[in-house]
Image (cartoon, rainbow, N blue to C red; front, top):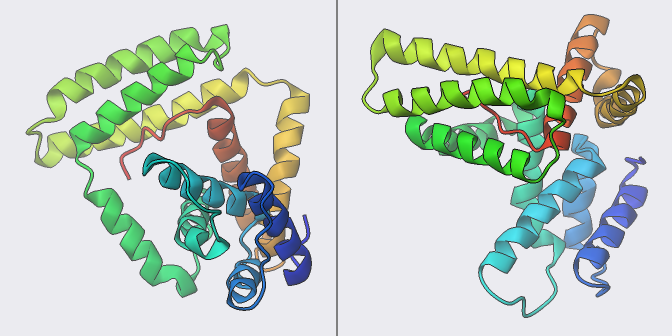
Length: 236
């Protein structure tokens, strides 16, 4: 995927046109500056698409759509998706520190019981949609049982008990992704690897080999989570 500003903007413009049911909104002037800034920052175009999707979902929740959505409306969602991706793969940039603090502040406002409730609901939804391989059932059942117990105990836990629960959630998070990944064949993993390489292309030159390998592995795991619609169990 091209990350030259003009090529990048054309891809975003085409995607925005499809989301707007064929209504073309040209990305020019200030809008071009916004989108070319995403390209210069290294926002993978597929992540920009996800941010645009979020904006449209929120717009539709407000009621019937009355007019086409402009790209300027999508900027915060695009940057939020990008920062979430950066944290997931271990790439942090000082230029987004202030926005990261804002995102982390929003995340920390979610209580542990609420987080666990959302996780259980999303696991249930993933299973109901039939996207989880039957070989995954045993792991899902066991993790769901642990989460139900944790949800019942989460209210009022403090100190070392809370730390132990948060640590256990991180372990379960790694386990569920590992279990999902184990159901994929070699061709599927290779495809996800190529997608991870595309996402990381803008950062590879500035990364040492070990750091890139870790980021690539994390990116593949993020794509596995996305493919199966899995929640983030870890309480971040």
